[in-house]
Length: 112
Image 1: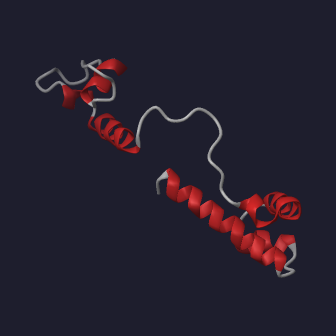
Image 2 (image 1 turned 90 degrees about the horizontal axis):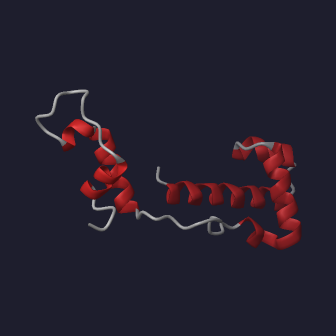
């Protein structure tokens, strides 16, 4: 499950919890049904009172934006899984040492 799918799933869980809370279900029961902690449900309940359902909707993650696209991250993962020897065929196993810049160039993650 990629990050985007996980965030959507978490939002669905919060909104399901909100529906249960609004229908009068006890917070402990909501936590059991949605499989989260009671503290999470209490935060959701507080957000519902303060901002309504909008308070539980997903917002963009705070912080600095990613420098690599999803495609670049997948390519980097593929390279790392293949191992350094795959980038230097014919080299002695276990003796290949690549720096991040070499891996990045191979994956076209940095400008040449």
